[in-house]
Length: 355
Ligand SMILES: NC(=O)c1ccc[n+]([C@@H]2O[C@H](COP(=O)([O-])OP(=O)(O)OC[C@H]3O[C@@H](n4cnc5c(N)ncnc54)[C@H](O)[C@@H]3O)[C@@H](O)[C@H]2O)c1
Image (cartoon, rainbow, N blue to C red; front, side, top):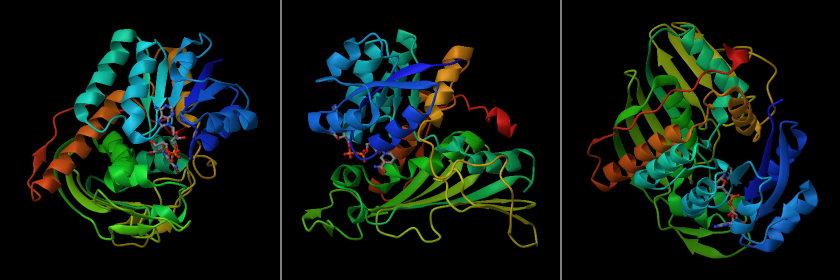
Protein backbone atom coordinates (compact mmCIF):
# COMPACT_ATOMS: atom_id res chain seq x y z
CA UNK A 1 0.00 0.00 0.00
CA UNK A 2 1.15 3.55 -0.71
CA UNK A 3 2.49 5.15 2.45
CA UNK A 4 4.21 8.41 3.44
CA UNK A 5 5.80 9.53 6.70
CA UNK A 6 4.98 13.22 6.95
CA UNK A 7 6.11 16.05 9.21
CA UNK A 8 4.37 19.40 9.64
CA UNK A 9 6.17 22.75 9.54
CA UNK A 10 3.98 25.53 10.97
CA UNK A 11 1.51 24.53 13.68
CA UNK A 12 -1.00 27.38 13.54
CA UNK A 13 -4.69 27.60 12.74
CA UNK A 14 -4.95 25.05 9.93
CA UNK A 15 -2.40 22.54 11.24
CA UNK A 16 -4.81 20.81 13.65
CA UNK A 17 -7.18 19.99 10.81
CA UNK A 18 -4.36 18.52 8.72
CA UNK A 19 -3.01 16.56 11.69
CA UNK A 20 -6.41 15.10 12.61
CA UNK A 21 -6.92 13.78 9.10
CA UNK A 22 -3.35 12.51 8.79
CA UNK A 23 -3.82 10.48 11.97
CA UNK A 24 -7.09 9.01 10.64
CA UNK A 25 -5.57 8.05 7.26
CA UNK A 26 -3.75 4.70 6.98
CA UNK A 27 -1.60 5.85 4.04
CA UNK A 28 -0.05 8.57 6.22
CA UNK A 29 1.95 8.66 9.45
CA UNK A 30 2.65 11.88 11.33
CA UNK A 31 6.25 11.60 12.53
CA UNK A 32 6.52 15.08 14.01
CA UNK A 33 6.20 18.84 13.75
CA UNK A 34 8.05 22.09 14.22
CA UNK A 35 7.12 25.75 14.60
CA UNK A 36 9.05 28.93 15.34
CA UNK A 37 6.84 28.96 18.44
CA UNK A 38 7.79 25.64 20.06
CA UNK A 39 4.67 25.60 22.27
CA UNK A 40 2.50 25.28 19.17
CA UNK A 41 4.43 22.27 17.91
CA UNK A 42 4.25 20.71 21.36
CA UNK A 43 0.48 21.19 21.49
CA UNK A 44 -0.01 19.66 18.05
CA UNK A 45 2.19 16.66 18.82
CA UNK A 46 0.60 16.12 22.24
CA UNK A 47 -2.80 15.86 20.54
CA UNK A 48 -1.79 13.86 17.45
CA UNK A 49 1.47 12.04 18.14
CA UNK A 50 4.99 12.26 16.69
CA UNK A 51 7.92 14.22 17.98
CA UNK A 52 8.69 17.91 18.34
CA UNK A 53 11.65 19.15 16.33
CA UNK A 54 13.34 22.26 17.73
CA UNK A 55 14.15 23.57 14.24
CA UNK A 56 13.40 22.94 10.58
CA UNK A 57 16.96 21.65 10.15
CA UNK A 58 16.38 19.01 12.84
CA UNK A 59 13.19 17.93 11.10
CA UNK A 60 14.92 17.72 7.71
CA UNK A 61 17.76 15.69 9.21
CA UNK A 62 15.32 12.96 10.30
CA UNK A 63 15.59 10.24 7.66
CA UNK A 64 12.17 8.88 8.57
CA UNK A 65 10.51 12.02 7.11
CA UNK A 66 9.45 11.33 3.50
CA UNK A 67 7.40 14.48 3.00
CA UNK A 68 7.19 17.92 4.58
CA UNK A 69 3.79 19.55 4.95
CA UNK A 70 4.41 23.30 4.80
CA UNK A 71 1.67 25.05 6.80
CA UNK A 72 3.59 28.24 7.58
CA UNK A 73 2.36 31.72 6.66
CA UNK A 74 2.53 32.77 3.00
CA UNK A 75 5.68 34.88 3.40
CA UNK A 76 7.58 31.85 4.80
CA UNK A 77 6.42 29.32 2.18
CA UNK A 78 9.32 29.69 -0.27
CA UNK A 79 12.14 29.41 2.28
CA UNK A 80 10.62 26.37 4.00
CA UNK A 81 9.77 24.59 0.73
CA UNK A 82 13.20 25.34 -0.75
CA UNK A 83 15.00 23.95 2.30
CA UNK A 84 12.85 20.81 2.33
CA UNK A 85 13.31 20.11 -1.40
CA UNK A 86 17.05 20.75 -1.12
CA UNK A 87 17.14 18.18 1.70
CA UNK A 88 15.58 15.62 -0.67
CA UNK A 89 12.09 15.60 0.89
CA UNK A 90 8.83 15.60 -1.00
CA UNK A 91 6.78 18.70 -0.16
CA UNK A 92 3.11 19.51 0.04
CA UNK A 93 2.71 23.22 0.66
CA UNK A 94 -0.31 25.27 1.59
CA UNK A 95 -1.19 28.04 -0.83
CA UNK A 96 0.21 30.10 -2.32
CA UNK A 97 3.27 28.18 -3.49
CA UNK A 98 5.08 31.54 -3.58
CA UNK A 99 4.21 35.22 -3.77
CA UNK A 100 6.34 35.79 -6.89
CA UNK A 101 6.32 33.73 -10.06
CA UNK A 102 10.15 33.62 -10.26
CA UNK A 103 10.27 32.01 -6.81
CA UNK A 104 7.52 29.54 -7.76
CA UNK A 105 9.44 28.49 -10.91
CA UNK A 106 12.63 28.10 -8.93
CA UNK A 107 10.87 25.68 -6.55
CA UNK A 108 9.41 23.64 -9.43
CA UNK A 109 12.87 23.38 -11.01
CA UNK A 110 14.50 22.49 -7.69
CA UNK A 111 12.02 19.64 -7.14
CA UNK A 112 12.75 18.33 -10.65
CA UNK A 113 16.51 18.59 -10.11
CA UNK A 114 16.28 16.74 -6.78
CA UNK A 115 13.91 14.09 -8.14
CA UNK A 116 11.28 14.76 -5.47
CA UNK A 117 7.61 15.73 -5.69
CA UNK A 118 6.27 19.24 -5.14
CA UNK A 119 2.56 19.18 -4.36
CA UNK A 120 0.60 22.34 -3.62
CA UNK A 121 -2.74 23.39 -2.20
CA UNK A 122 -5.48 24.21 -2.78
CA UNK A 123 -6.68 20.71 -3.57
CA UNK A 124 -10.41 21.21 -3.37
CA UNK A 125 -10.59 20.02 -6.99
CA UNK A 126 -10.31 16.53 -5.45
CA UNK A 127 -13.67 16.88 -3.65
CA UNK A 128 -16.80 14.99 -4.68
CA UNK A 129 -18.79 18.12 -5.59
CA UNK A 130 -15.90 19.51 -7.63
CA UNK A 131 -15.26 16.19 -9.41
CA UNK A 132 -18.99 15.89 -10.14
CA UNK A 133 -19.10 19.37 -11.67
CA UNK A 134 -16.01 18.62 -13.76
CA UNK A 135 -17.50 15.33 -14.98
CA UNK A 136 -20.73 17.07 -16.00
CA UNK A 137 -18.66 19.54 -18.03
CA UNK A 138 -16.67 16.70 -19.67
CA UNK A 139 -19.88 14.82 -20.41
CA UNK A 140 -21.29 17.89 -22.19
CA UNK A 141 -24.16 18.43 -19.74
CA UNK A 142 -24.14 22.18 -20.44
CA UNK A 143 -22.52 22.10 -23.86
CA UNK A 144 -19.61 24.34 -24.70
CA UNK A 145 -18.81 26.50 -21.65
CA UNK A 146 -18.18 30.14 -22.46
CA UNK A 147 -18.34 32.04 -19.16
CA UNK A 148 -17.80 31.36 -15.44
CA UNK A 149 -18.63 33.54 -12.44
CA UNK A 150 -16.43 32.70 -9.48
CA UNK A 151 -17.05 34.22 -6.06
CA UNK A 152 -14.53 34.13 -3.21
CA UNK A 153 -16.07 36.33 -0.52
CA UNK A 154 -14.51 35.32 2.79
CA UNK A 155 -15.93 37.91 5.17
CA UNK A 156 -13.85 39.83 7.75
CA UNK A 157 -11.20 37.37 8.96
CA UNK A 158 -10.88 39.11 12.35
CA UNK A 159 -14.23 37.56 13.27
CA UNK A 160 -12.65 34.09 13.58
CA UNK A 161 -8.89 33.95 12.91
CA UNK A 162 -6.64 34.36 16.00
CA UNK A 163 -4.29 36.66 14.02
CA UNK A 164 -5.37 37.33 10.42
CA UNK A 165 -2.73 39.97 9.64
CA UNK A 166 -0.63 37.51 7.62
CA UNK A 167 -3.66 36.72 5.45
CA UNK A 168 -4.61 40.39 5.04
CA UNK A 169 -1.01 41.13 3.99
CA UNK A 170 -1.37 38.93 0.91
CA UNK A 171 -5.01 39.91 0.24
CA UNK A 172 -8.12 37.98 -0.74
CA UNK A 173 -7.20 37.21 -4.35
CA UNK A 174 -4.05 35.42 -3.17
CA UNK A 175 -5.58 33.83 -0.11
CA UNK A 176 -8.99 32.66 -1.35
CA UNK A 177 -9.09 33.59 -5.05
CA UNK A 178 -6.58 30.74 -5.56
CA UNK A 179 -9.28 28.12 -4.86
CA UNK A 180 -11.58 28.84 -7.82
CA UNK A 181 -8.53 29.76 -9.94
CA UNK A 182 -7.00 26.35 -9.35
CA UNK A 183 -10.23 24.47 -10.06
CA UNK A 184 -11.02 26.47 -13.19
CA UNK A 185 -7.55 26.23 -14.71
CA UNK A 186 -7.56 22.46 -14.11
CA UNK A 187 -10.86 22.21 -15.98
CA UNK A 188 -10.45 24.86 -18.71
CA UNK A 189 -6.67 25.21 -19.05
CA UNK A 190 -4.19 27.97 -18.30
CA UNK A 191 -5.06 31.66 -18.07
CA UNK A 192 -3.79 33.64 -21.03
CA UNK A 193 -4.76 37.23 -20.13
CA UNK A 194 -5.88 39.09 -16.99
CA UNK A 195 -7.48 42.44 -16.25
CA UNK A 196 -8.00 43.35 -12.60
CA UNK A 197 -9.23 46.04 -10.24
CA UNK A 198 -8.57 46.14 -6.50
CA UNK A 199 -9.65 48.44 -3.69
CA UNK A 200 -9.45 48.76 0.09
CA UNK A 201 -13.01 49.01 1.34
CA UNK A 202 -12.46 49.00 5.12
CA UNK A 203 -8.84 49.89 6.01
CA UNK A 204 -9.26 50.10 9.81
CA UNK A 205 -10.13 46.73 11.36
CA UNK A 206 -10.86 45.70 14.96
CA UNK A 207 -10.17 42.11 16.00
CA UNK A 208 -12.86 40.33 18.01
CA UNK A 209 -10.38 40.40 20.92
CA UNK A 210 -10.37 44.19 20.83
CA UNK A 211 -7.07 45.15 19.18
CA UNK A 212 -6.98 47.32 16.03
CA UNK A 213 -4.93 47.04 12.89
CA UNK A 214 -4.68 48.79 9.54
CA UNK A 215 -4.77 47.00 6.18
CA UNK A 216 -1.73 47.34 3.91
CA UNK A 217 -3.24 45.54 0.91
CA UNK A 218 -6.64 45.76 -0.87
CA UNK A 219 -9.47 43.80 0.78
CA UNK A 220 -11.56 43.54 -2.41
CA UNK A 221 -10.51 42.58 -5.95
CA UNK A 222 -12.09 41.50 -9.17
CA UNK A 223 -10.36 39.97 -12.16
CA UNK A 224 -11.47 39.07 -15.67
CA UNK A 225 -9.53 36.13 -17.03
CA UNK A 226 -9.28 34.63 -20.50
CA UNK A 227 -8.56 30.90 -20.35
CA UNK A 228 -6.95 28.70 -22.99
CA UNK A 229 -10.21 26.83 -23.72
CA UNK A 230 -11.81 30.19 -24.71
CA UNK A 231 -13.66 30.50 -21.43
CA UNK A 232 -13.99 33.93 -19.80
CA UNK A 233 -13.95 34.00 -15.98
CA UNK A 234 -15.06 36.84 -13.76
CA UNK A 235 -13.54 36.28 -10.31
CA UNK A 236 -14.33 38.36 -7.23
CA UNK A 237 -12.42 37.95 -3.96
CA UNK A 238 -13.02 39.85 -0.75
CA UNK A 239 -12.28 40.02 2.97
CA UNK A 240 -15.30 42.29 3.48
CA UNK A 241 -18.39 40.73 1.92
CA UNK A 242 -19.88 37.88 3.98
CA UNK A 243 -20.27 34.55 2.16
CA UNK A 244 -24.09 34.26 1.88
CA UNK A 245 -24.69 33.17 -1.72
CA UNK A 246 -21.26 34.39 -2.82
CA UNK A 247 -18.81 31.53 -2.35
CA UNK A 248 -19.59 29.48 -5.40
CA UNK A 249 -19.07 28.89 -9.07
CA UNK A 250 -21.55 29.39 -11.90
CA UNK A 251 -20.60 27.78 -15.20
CA UNK A 252 -22.61 28.85 -18.24
CA UNK A 253 -22.59 26.92 -21.50
CA UNK A 254 -24.50 26.80 -24.77
CA UNK A 255 -26.89 24.10 -23.48
CA UNK A 256 -27.27 25.09 -19.82
CA UNK A 257 -25.70 26.17 -16.57
CA UNK A 258 -24.11 24.54 -13.53
CA UNK A 259 -24.00 25.98 -10.01
CA UNK A 260 -21.69 24.80 -7.23
CA UNK A 261 -22.78 26.48 -4.00
CA UNK A 262 -19.25 26.50 -2.61
CA UNK A 263 -16.00 25.51 -4.28
CA UNK A 264 -14.52 24.90 -0.83
CA UNK A 265 -16.62 22.06 0.61
CA UNK A 266 -16.42 18.54 -0.82
CA UNK A 267 -20.15 18.07 -0.11
CA UNK A 268 -21.27 21.30 -1.78
CA UNK A 269 -24.68 21.39 -3.40
CA UNK A 270 -24.41 21.12 -7.20
CA UNK A 271 -27.30 22.19 -9.43
CA UNK A 272 -27.86 21.84 -13.17
CA UNK A 273 -30.10 24.06 -15.25
CA UNK A 274 -30.78 22.93 -18.81
CA UNK A 275 -31.10 25.86 -21.18
CA UNK A 276 -34.55 27.41 -20.67
CA UNK A 277 -35.22 25.20 -17.61
CA UNK A 278 -34.78 25.65 -13.86
CA UNK A 279 -31.91 24.71 -11.53
CA UNK A 280 -32.25 21.22 -10.03
CA UNK A 281 -29.92 19.52 -7.59
CA UNK A 282 -27.80 16.71 -9.08
CA UNK A 283 -26.48 13.69 -7.14
CA UNK A 284 -22.72 13.67 -6.55
CA UNK A 285 -20.63 10.92 -8.18
CA UNK A 286 -20.20 9.25 -4.79
CA UNK A 287 -21.00 9.85 -1.12
CA UNK A 288 -19.03 13.02 -0.28
CA UNK A 289 -16.67 13.77 2.58
CA UNK A 290 -18.44 16.35 4.79
CA UNK A 291 -16.47 19.60 4.55
CA UNK A 292 -12.83 19.59 3.41
CA UNK A 293 -10.65 16.49 3.63
CA UNK A 294 -7.22 18.06 4.19
CA UNK A 295 -5.50 14.69 3.68
CA UNK A 296 -6.82 13.97 0.19
CA UNK A 297 -3.95 15.61 -1.71
CA UNK A 298 -1.47 13.84 0.58
CA UNK A 299 -3.02 10.44 -0.15
CA UNK A 300 -2.96 11.23 -3.88
CA UNK A 301 0.71 12.19 -3.51
CA UNK A 302 1.50 8.91 -1.71
CA UNK A 303 -0.33 6.88 -4.38
CA UNK A 304 1.27 8.85 -7.22
CA UNK A 305 4.76 8.12 -5.88
CA UNK A 306 3.85 4.43 -5.42
CA UNK A 307 2.36 4.19 -8.95
CA UNK A 308 5.01 6.35 -10.65
CA UNK A 309 2.43 8.77 -12.05
CA UNK A 310 2.11 12.57 -11.55
CA UNK A 311 0.17 13.65 -8.47
CA UNK A 312 -2.89 15.76 -9.21
CA UNK A 313 -1.89 18.86 -7.21
CA UNK A 314 1.38 19.94 -8.80
CA UNK A 315 3.85 22.70 -8.13
CA UNK A 316 3.79 23.44 -11.85
CA UNK A 317 0.04 24.16 -11.75
CA UNK A 318 0.42 26.19 -8.54
CA UNK A 319 3.25 28.19 -10.16
CA UNK A 320 0.93 29.05 -13.05
CA UNK A 321 -1.65 30.29 -10.54
CA UNK A 322 1.06 32.42 -8.90
CA UNK A 323 1.81 33.97 -12.30
CA UNK A 324 -1.91 34.74 -12.71
CA UNK A 325 -2.01 36.40 -9.28
CA UNK A 326 1.08 38.43 -10.14
CA UNK A 327 -0.54 39.47 -13.43
CA UNK A 328 -3.72 40.49 -11.59
CA UNK A 329 -1.70 42.63 -9.16
CA UNK A 330 0.19 44.25 -12.06
CA UNK A 331 -3.08 44.91 -13.90
CA UNK A 332 -4.78 46.45 -10.84
CA UNK A 333 -1.70 48.59 -10.17
CA UNK A 334 -1.66 49.64 -13.81
CA UNK A 335 -5.25 50.91 -13.91
CA UNK A 336 -6.77 47.69 -15.25
CA UNK A 337 -4.61 47.21 -18.35
CA UNK A 338 -4.55 43.66 -19.73
CA UNK A 339 -1.54 41.55 -18.68
CA UNK A 340 -0.51 38.40 -20.56
CA UNK A 341 0.22 35.12 -18.75
CA UNK A 342 2.63 32.69 -20.41
CA UNK A 343 3.21 29.68 -18.18
CA UNK A 344 1.58 26.32 -18.75
CA UNK A 345 1.16 23.09 -16.80
CA UNK A 346 0.09 19.51 -17.31
CA UNK A 347 -3.62 19.33 -16.50
CA UNK A 348 -4.52 16.89 -13.70
CA UNK A 349 -6.48 13.70 -14.35
CA UNK A 350 -9.94 13.32 -12.79
CA UNK A 351 -10.02 10.90 -9.85
CA UNK A 352 -10.70 7.27 -10.83
CA UNK A 353 -14.11 7.28 -9.15
CA UNK A 354 -15.17 10.28 -11.25
CA UNK A 355 -14.12 9.08 -14.70
N1 LIG B 1 -6.51 29.03 8.65
C1 LIG B 1 -7.22 28.50 7.68
O1 LIG B 1 -8.44 28.28 7.78
C2 LIG B 1 -6.54 28.08 6.40
C3 LIG B 1 -7.29 27.39 5.46
C4 LIG B 1 -6.68 26.95 4.30
C5 LIG B 1 -5.36 27.23 4.08
N2 LIG B 1 -4.63 27.93 5.00
C6 LIG B 1 -3.23 28.19 4.69
O2 LIG B 1 -2.42 27.55 5.66
C7 LIG B 1 -1.25 28.32 5.93
C8 LIG B 1 -1.19 28.62 7.40
O3 LIG B 1 -2.34 29.35 7.75
P1 LIG B 1 -2.79 29.47 9.28
O4 LIG B 1 -4.09 30.16 9.26
O5 LIG B 1 -2.65 28.15 9.95
O6 LIG B 1 -1.65 30.49 9.78
P2 LIG B 1 -1.17 30.72 11.28
O7 LIG B 1 -0.55 32.07 11.30
O8 LIG B 1 -2.28 30.40 12.23
O9 LIG B 1 -0.04 29.60 11.48
C9 LIG B 1 1.21 29.62 10.82
C10 LIG B 1 2.23 29.00 11.75
O10 LIG B 1 3.46 28.92 11.05
C11 LIG B 1 4.51 29.25 11.96
N3 LIG B 1 5.65 29.67 11.16
C12 LIG B 1 5.79 30.80 10.43
N4 LIG B 1 6.98 30.82 9.81
C13 LIG B 1 7.60 29.66 10.15
C14 LIG B 1 8.86 29.09 9.81
N5 LIG B 1 9.71 29.71 8.99
N6 LIG B 1 9.17 27.88 10.32
C15 LIG B 1 8.33 27.24 11.16
N7 LIG B 1 7.10 27.74 11.51
C16 LIG B 1 6.75 28.93 11.00
C17 LIG B 1 3.91 30.34 12.84
O11 LIG B 1 4.62 30.45 14.06
C18 LIG B 1 2.49 29.82 13.01
O12 LIG B 1 2.35 28.99 14.15
C19 LIG B 1 -1.36 29.56 5.05
O13 LIG B 1 -0.65 29.35 3.87
C20 LIG B 1 -2.83 29.65 4.74
O14 LIG B 1 -3.06 30.28 3.49
C21 LIG B 1 -5.18 28.34 6.16
